[in-house]
Image (cartoon, rainbow over all chains, first blue to last red; front, side):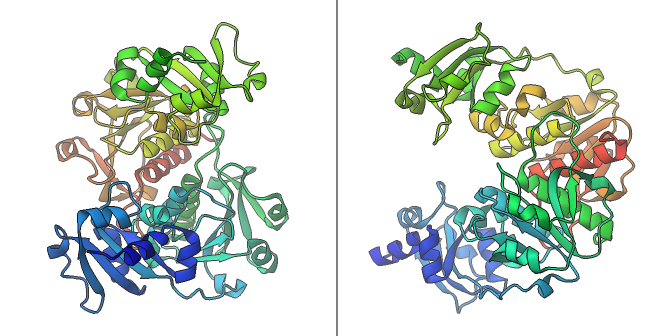
Length: 251
Length: 251
């Protein structure tokens, strides 16, 4: 049985303030937990309901493992329908992000993406397409929010996520900046440089106006129908796919 | 003020059983409501909080319009944070879907897509790319579920959605069937026929086994990283984009 203070500590991690204070976050579900166990992340503790415990023999001995009641799992889980397995994982040390670190690759940069489901889907998709790094503005949703972790389906374990002042970053980089905008060059006709930044904006407001002068190439996903906009995770996926296609990275 | 029976009727439409019984559904938010008002759908009634009512002068006189209290809006809304405007819209008469109706175009067919957010995003994306019609297996999420309507961002007003026995449909069609599968031909190398069906499977289980013999071309979105799968709405978007690119439909 979990003590009150244990429950209080774990549920505090549902909130960004306490995740930052304690420098750790929650991962739930067998698949996602195993992805973090097998990654470079430090898994601090794993809590399992009795039903799943026998299947957990792949979790290394050094990780603290506790069997908890279904009621306690319901208490500590951030999900409406808990999956029965929950890990506490340490946040990685954030390397300071320098413009030089982005050279030689393409990097997605998110300007205030708000929806945790969208951010998680972007992490999952970017990792599928072989991206190593995601850069987010300070006001983008927190990648360690339980909803983001869940939507990323374990891919967060393999993708570096950086939070930074992107205005400052864009001002200092010499890389070409491609911005997802309306009325730009059709994405199917872009000649991509071999390295660069792809900038995607907020769900409702797009890219902030003060960042527009930093965009070298306005790029548009052509619209055939009448929808007003695309979901930002869908737009991110289409940019990732185009970059992978143009570089032949999938061959 | 709304009567108890009015509130009971509207909230019953949060549930599929009553949507089917009454053949109508709920649309919320200014943007989405206006899309339906301007579409071929019959809007039965619009409920607005006082604050928004003055902006509603574009709603035709023939549509029943009621101003309701914030408390009543909270009661009838299917959203945690109501947007203050809710319409009751009649479901369209479903034309029976014949294999002939699909000739000359590409059509997305969904096999048991479960998540309302995914279905709504697929509707929004397909409509953006100019698709006219979406075909769903009987067990796919209900397109008139309030969460689907919300995620579709009004695009449901312009896209026909059909529910049918897709095994039967695929058995009778002469069109080429492209299935989203692992280990198929890379999507970037496919020579698409000028008409056909694109079949996408369930979030967890993919395409049902009994449908596999109906697939003429297994198509894969190449994986560069290590993620196990892509979100189905992301996959659908990548197929839509490839079709539009290959047909030059965006020019």
